[in-house]
Image (cartoon, rainbow, N blue to C red; front, side, top):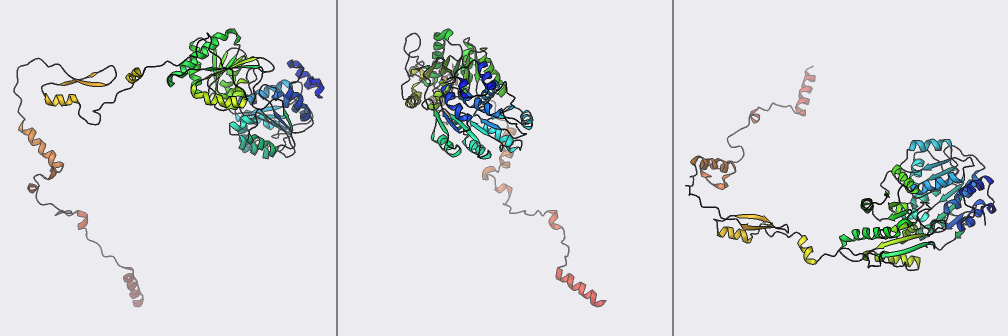
Length: 519
């Protein structure tokens, strides 16, 4: 089958031909005809099968007729991440280059003012992330009552990111007569409930078993041996570099996935130190930095991209030859999306996963989902898996700081020795282990004895006033006189002021009555 057999507009066919595609993928061949007829479509396909073109091409074909109104877009595409939304926008620009359609991209990290200006002029295609879309609606800048076609892309990723309540809210803002195109790589129960509630008799298209990996991807699992826990990250970095060196020029572009952002920074610096061309991508980066990094990766200005799961969905970079799971994903579905960044559009690719014994349970979950075992392999050279450096127990004990038994006021043997021999003094000596031990200092040379100075009498007398000021603990109480209660003989001046006579209310009333009688 060719695209010309799908009853598409000649302008759309011309744009498709200029991209170099001649035959549609299975999800496109089965999804485009019912979408052109206005039916709801539920598409289930693994990543990298051409789902974006499966809904963008029929949308453009239907939008050729009609005109957009201000603040009321005609179609809406929801994407879970900024990168995926930008990817969808690029596809629409590619396939609509010969058609006069307006488009707006609503994502975070971009000025509201520029987005408002596009919405005010009217847009045919609105591509947005759920959070930024609701921001515009709540500010009164956008109305969804004119939506004709609504697309939800990567719905299972929406579930992982907690967007399902927002999706339900957006669905209720759109007309009941809309056409809905719903695409997902997996179908967890919550996504199934969502489709049953908001789709009307959808045409179900399932071109591959849910949660399955592409057959064009060669998978391998490398086990990192046991050892001290704090040495495993270094062992993983050594193993990763060994694989990269072994693959050599076959690594044209590669994405390395980590579970934590702090590991991304450490791994990026390590690879840069060893001479690799590398960049990083995660959710905490500014949007401009993220887009610039992706552009450098697409243009081969950087070879390796160390990223979080933000790069696991929607990145359509056909030249990615390798994917490395530096950390095993904790959610088994993420494994499918990670390795799906390679082996796209019929190309072959390789996916390596580095796993420790602590990550064995996640590997087991992934293999249960895939219903097959990931092939095990050894590190390049045929030797055993790299192990973290083992440290002898004695050495470990030496590295641990020893607690001093004299911290809570207990007396040490050296202190007892000092009490028993007052003529010797002790001096602390720092040992290699970092603890303090007291040893007797060498005895000073004999010096001529000098008479001890006698305590001066004024100093002895100076002690008494301080003791009396503190209360004297009851000493010499009789010399200070009897205890005094209250103020004693002292009377404050304010208490000697005479109190003026104050007329009561009744007395005042009587005086006023007498004056009236006299009058």
